[in-house]
Image 1 (cartoon, helix red, strand yellow):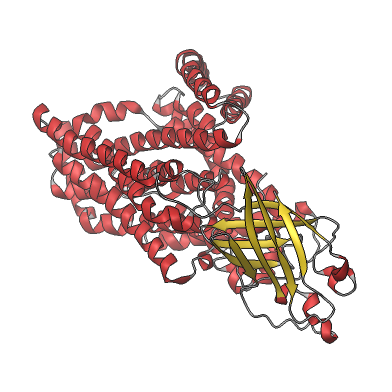
Image 2 (tube, each protein chain N blue to C red; image 1 turned 180 degrees about the vertical axis):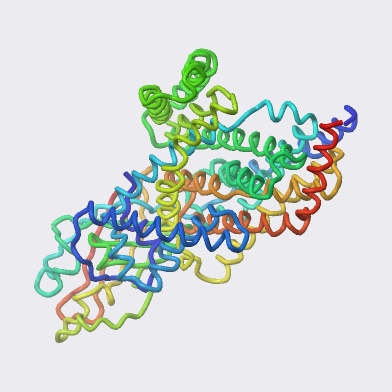
Length: 160
Length: 444
């Protein structure tokens, strides 16, 4: 291969794309991605109302409630203490977070009386707002159990 | 140890929520997991060989199918029994050891002299085969970053990672495909191997930089210390340890094999190198790869090392890594048309960047169109190395679980398409003709 041809090929096939790469990396610095929420959050809440049977089994071994968030852009997957019982999927819209079980599940074990919702995460809902103080982020929101007569909404705050 | 709570469950089928688990001791669970994984890998490996694909692709597919994309979706209770979250830590650790040894073998198989002997065409093709997909990957990041990332990752890290993941070529899988098709000694095979070697080294250097960049944001260790430490370590390995490593070859040359004591020393050397790079703030795998790269390149010695380690690594440990990758991948997490559009865009960009980029570069270097197309097809094989890089990316948090699933799918598609495309562009009869021609020329 002639050196002149090699030089032209290098300029076109290597030099030009490298310049384009620099331009792309510069352009990308102006892009904004959703707020990062992934990781473990320590939840502070008064869980007394839910500790009465049968709801106490849902959040598995309090006293400390741990919220784990996996994130892909605006999509969230959330578990509360026991991932097998409380697996929620949610979305982040700006600073507002909403999460609920993403499928309707008929659970024959979760039927007893009016407190049916307590036995599974079937009716567990989470709504929260993300607050920021400096580099630290906090969640403030409510946990609700639809279908459970004796379970009032619980207000919580969470910090990483 | 990676966290396996919501991240893990994110990768599980949404049909599965509360599985009935049967209590098993961790060791029984692990042995059961290994047995199921090896059996599946063997079955799928044979099936893929039957359809004229390399066995390793079948093993990769088996790993994916054992995860939430199929097993967790169709049989959630069985999946929970086999792969409970609490039992994945051991599987992960063993698979990491396997991939560590495998990276050492990949490094040992690399030989820069192959590139030097291939001339300007190889140099131009290899450079373009990195830059073209890299730039397209970075360009695609403009679309993916706001949709699939978050603000804990800078655009620079994200775009560089996407570029690196797009530009990698699976050197070992490529070598396997070329061997299976008896193309290793052909002009096309030699050129492809040389280019793939350069791609791998460059890809790993870029990845090392990204890992440093990302970890520097979280670690207490200053960035300059990591960079300076890495450079010093690299120089030490090249100029101090490399001459000493010839001792391994001398021992092999004297006895015709490596004794158990020397083998243990070699393993120790790989582990120490891996630990140093991890301590420096890059990744265990870089140390293992570098340890392999500085090994003496005598073909008999390299083959001996490969034979010594490969059987346990390929038969036992690599399928575990594929299965662990499969457990982290969930196609059901790609919800909605937009996500599938992103996935399609990733696959198209990956193929056009690598395949078309390499083909055009090879043609510009004076290689005939058919050979140039063959080079493009071969360089597009991402396979195992793609899996390794993507797992590193997920570990350090530069990519998210959904993007990981998309990229794994891309790596699978680009690897799977290699053999049929190559058969179409470069049929077996042409290979036989070329090899006969070379033999006649050698005899003359």
